[in-house]
Image (cartoon, rainbow, N blue to C red; front, side):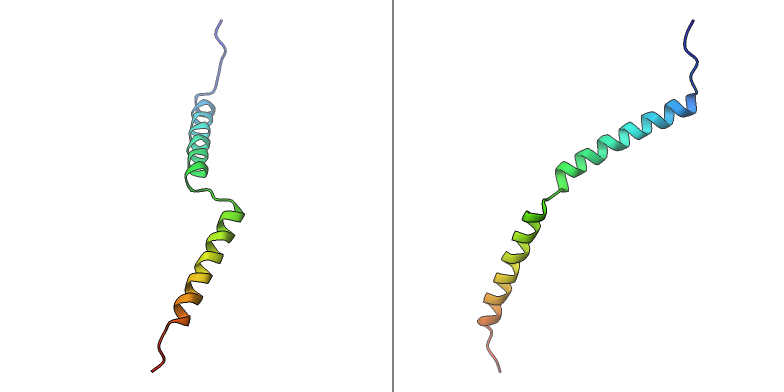
Amino acid sequence: MAEILSLSKARKAKARTEKEAAAEANRLKFGRTKAEKLKDAAEKAKADKHIDGHKRED
């Protein structure tokens, strides 16, 4: 005989696995390491300092 299962639990489990797959895709697409974020912040700070050094004062 077939196993009896709750359709609501099966639907929720399917939704949970789909949500986890989407989350994993987003982690790969948008996730950056702390080192990458710090490097970008340092580069931005250096560029801002460079630009500020070339501003004319009126």
